[in-house]
Length: 232
Image 1 (cartoon, one colour):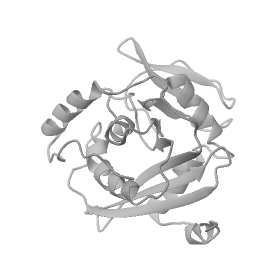
Image 2 (tube, rainbow, N blue to C red):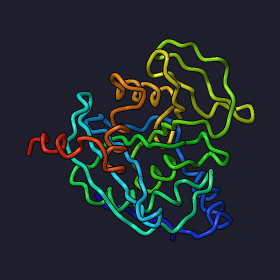
Image 3 (cartoon, rainbow, N blue to C red):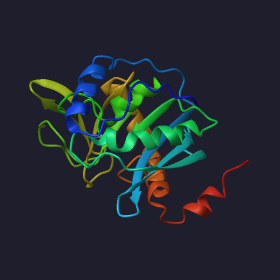
Image 4 (tube, rainbow, N blue to C red):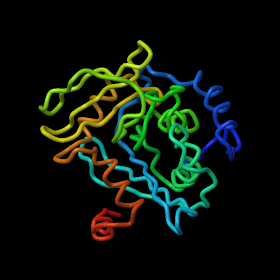
């Protein structure tokens, strides 16, 4: 797939804020999805003491969630770890991995925030605007917002509220496990985002898209054995 590069990659948080503020107005939080046949997960790891970014994208069939294609990209890390600016550290390498795909995913689930972000422009929003692919943020931890107590049963969720506005949902994907934090990234409503996260989740806390991308990004587990099972 071909990526339309919208901006240079900044080196400071001050420069990054300007880009976030400019692009946040382009985020669409209503449903603009076509039929979803392929879902993708993206994740990033770091090597060489953090100096090299290793990005992974895993494309799965939907709704069967079978791995169809994957891609990896390595790129020098140019932005420090600063909460609220994850996309500037990770997305450059993610875009390079996406460009290697022969299958264009219909939906991308990101390991990070969508609009559940201080400037309503987390990594899922950034990636969605740059690729114009529907995206969902599925974060493992809370960045901003508050919510009511969450029941223990699976599929239970509560609105995530920030400055009087619903910015996402705290969702329990499995009974008795920690919740995930779901928010619209781009071209997906919150209700639809919750539905796809649940439909992409099997017996674990995290969606299969995230689990595959995480294994690829961290190069751990029996990932090579699993990849060899992909049909040509």
